[in-house]
Each structure stands twice: as structure tokens, then as C-alpha cells.
Image: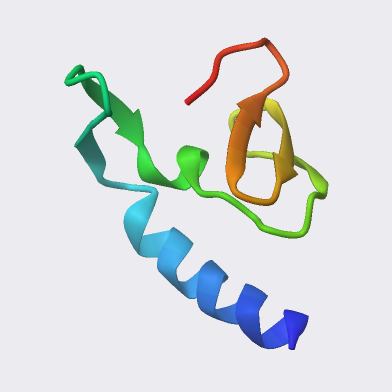
Length: 70
């Protein structure tokens, strides 16, 4: 199950990571971000991203180690 999910995610990552997109937050602020960097995993695993930022993933929440909530 996990292998299949990661395979799908990997295929999407290659496409999405190249494109910079703007996403509107709840407070109405438009932010520019890299899609691949923001992508969330549900299994709560610490993972080293390509940009060198270590992220901790938890269910239903996105958290950066530098304290910035996305």
C-alpha cells in the first residue's frame, strides 16, 4: 500500500515541483510556494527534502521545524 502511494506521489512530484503556484490561505493572504516543498505526508515521518529543510509530518497538520506554520 505504501509503495503504491509513494509511487503515485513520486510521479506527481516531478511535475509539480517545477511549477511555482500561489495558494490562498484562510486569512486571505496570497503566498507563493513551491508545490513539492509544501507536499504533505500523512504517516508522521521525518523526511529530508531537496531544499534541505527538515519537516515533521503529522496527520492533518503541516509543520516546519523552524516554527513556521503553513
